[in-house]
Length: 289
Image 1: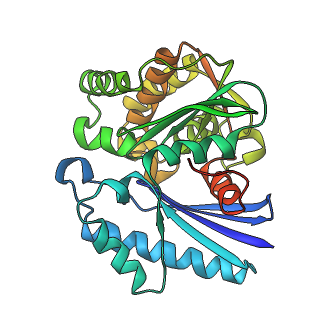
Image 2 (image 1 turned 180 degrees about the vertical axis):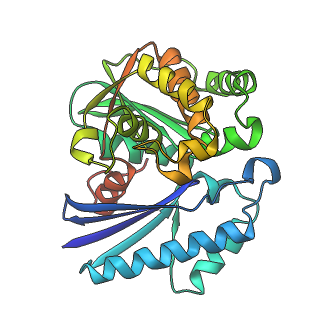
Image 3 (image 1 turned 135 degrees about the horizontal axis):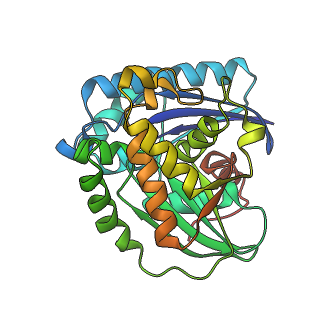
């Protein structure tokens, strides 16, 4: 069976086409659904429309690719929006139904999508929320989502380092003390973007990104460099998606601060993430408690 999995995130919509559990390809469309959410509590009409168009397009592409089952799930931006039902209704008028994933379950999707072996912490930095989950081959022993991500950071702090750092440090305290683990696996577009930038990728190469050891010192150096560049100059950075250039600084600070909080000076970046986790969930390979 070929499957299509559409992840409706706070910053991007992504499509995974998979033959059983073997990835065929992934595609991304950065639509900024969650822009303005932190300030208003609501999804903006234009952002909803652009995102709905992207979802509809990905459904059509999945059908063209021969997907027998197509699933779409939404995360923090839709989950926390006061007007989420308006977005759900917009999609239903197009014949599309979505699953709004609970915060604790979002952390589990990321873990089961990225996990390979050992005792690990899986970090999933998104646009409006960031999840941490700790576990091993026996299962998950810790999973928590906090309402912080690169879009929320930009809405609240723009690119003011002092404000960004204070905002991040205040919220990530909410994770509390985590169980012990050996490695951090980092999923999501922030970590993969920093790998692509560090490797000067003119064309994104998932084979290089997957299992890449990304050091905190590299993240800090690149974040500072980008912070000192104009938005126009950022268009010339190989590896940085143009639509991500306005939120990458906050994402870099969040990634760095989380490494500090978790006591590691590097992360292992994974290409397999909550989309693979959601497919495993739909196939009954694990359950939400």
